[in-house]
Image (cartoon, rainbow, N blue to C red):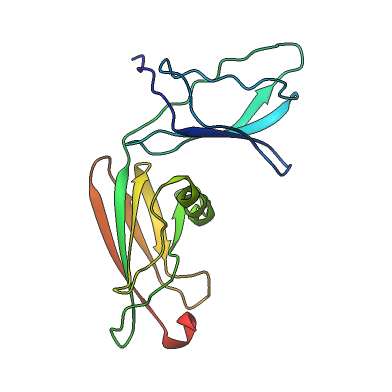
Length: 176
């Protein structure tokens, strides 16, 4: 089934193994954008469009002999993750960035934190110990309150258009 064209809110093209990125603010209404003078190599592409989970492609090869390559980004409706973090005493933990790992073991915390710079809400707990992350690709994830050995993790399933909730408890010394 062919998809429809979306106009993107922004996109980034990052060369694998190198810092920096080529960026575009928007595409045309036809959903097409052109980056000129992109060097041959292997890239990752990230696209954002309001109301959809981010589209991310890894290992995109740009050959030297082809001046233009059409690369479709496929967007999906995402789900929402609500996390509440408390201490063992029941006190909410403010200012904590929950860790989220996908089914392949990739830590997506930085990616979703970075997306906060593009207008998505930051994934960080508030004064009630709650954090909400919208637009997550459907799938299985492991959510934890940190990276330490005492950090508990909970498996959660994200479904398109649905909200999944998780409650995490941390040791008192872990949040200091």
